[in-house]
Image 1 (cartoon, rainbow, N blue to C red):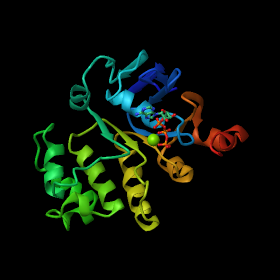
Image 2 (image 1 turned 45 degrees about the vertical axis):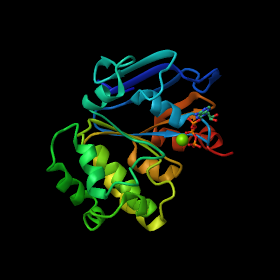
Image 3 (image 1 turned 60 degrees about the vertical axis):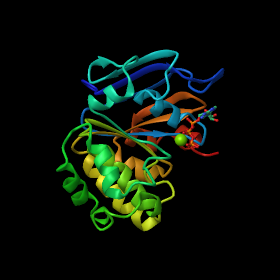
Image 4 (image 1 turned 90 degrees about the vertical axis):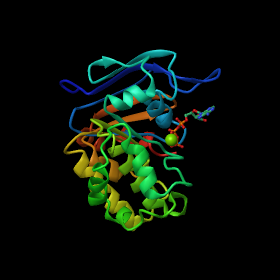
Length: 233
Ligand SMILES: Nc1ncnc2c1ncn2[C@@H]1O[C@H](COP(=O)(O)OP(=O)(O)OP(=O)(O)O)[C@@H](O)[C@H]1O
Ligand SMILES: [Mg+2]
């Protein structure tokens, strides 16, 4: 699908104990650009991202990141190699301040100046450096989580529902930043707001019950009647 993809995942089977959640899931991403992963609740989107980052160990399948087979590479090494991850839940340390959260994110790059760049992207964070992350609004917390992931200077950023629980006015602000990021690095986004996902991404993968059931350019998919049927409960 992409010439020289930064990420290529094939045939992924991941289990929670004996319960199988992924049944040969697939996804790939270009070195620069946005890719969306869409699907109903429980389709396996979070499980797929956790498998890519190494939080879950798939029983079968292949994960190639930046031309390396990373199936058995520990998470911290995947991150050091340029994989950024913003999880759906528990993405910030509530008992640490905004600044401390960012310092934790910067450890992998040993580059404290990166914090200024994050504040340029999300100025709201600059006003709240000393505030405990647990007291931030939903939108501010998402910005902090994205900012923290950026501090490790990722080549590929995996985002699990970056606008979930965020007030509509702030969603636009986050979406604009992600659009810009997708013009500079590789961005893989799981998103419930399909319109928004398709704005950031040029390609999409549709998941249903642990399988990748459709993929294509957003323009192709938008005109396919099957596409919306997979996204309607
Ligand atoms: N820790 C867990 N233990 C057992 N089953 C789990 C666990 N986490 C997820 N599952 C199951 O795996 C399947 C896929 O879940 P997953 O969280 O990946 O879906 P999702 O597409 O991210 O959904 P959502 O849109 O609601 O975030 C679901 O059937 C879910 O119940
Ligand atoms: Mg999820």
